Image (tube, rainbow, N blue to C red; front, side, top):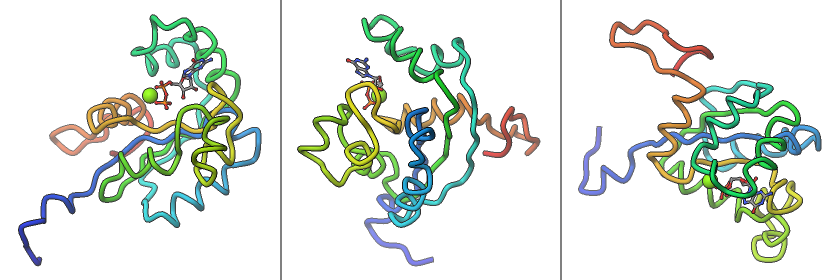
Length: 161
Ligand code: GDP
Ligand code: MG
C-alpha cells in the first residue's frame, strides 16, 4: 500500500452509536441510518435491545452521581434502543459532530442540520448517543459487543467484533 507521513491519521476508528427510545418511537431510524451511511460510516454491527435498569446504570455509570441520573435511566429504559458500531476514519469525533450538542432544543438553533436538532426534543430526549472519546468508544463497544478471544473464538453475548 501507499505510505506517506500522514498515514497514521488515516487509521480507521470505531465508535458506539445508539438510537434512543424516542428515536425509535419517532420513526427516525431510517433517516438516521441513511445519514450515517451517506456520511461515510460503515455499520459493523447492530442490535436492538430493551435495556434493563442494571444495564442502563452500567452504561451510564459516569453519570451515577448526577441529579438527572434517575430520569436518564427511566428514559433510556422506556423502550428499545438500537445500538450500532460505526467505523470510519475519525469516527468518534465525526459522529459527535453529526449528532450535535447534547441539548436538542439548543441544537435546533445553533446546529439545525444536526441529528439531535432534527430528531430530538430537549436536553434529555435527544434521540441519539455517541461515544465522547476513543477511550469511551472502546469501553462502550465492549460493553455491548464483546471481542473475540486470542484463539479467534467468539466470546460475545451479541456476536462478532
Ligand atoms: P452526551 O454525551 O451529549 O450524550 O451528554 P452527557 O454524557 O452529558 O449525558 C448523557 C445523556 O444524559 C444525554 O445525552 C441526555 O440524554 C441526558 N442528560 C444530560 N444532561 C441532562 C440533564 O441535565 N437533565 C436530564 N434530564 N438529562 C440529561
Ligand atoms: Mg456523554
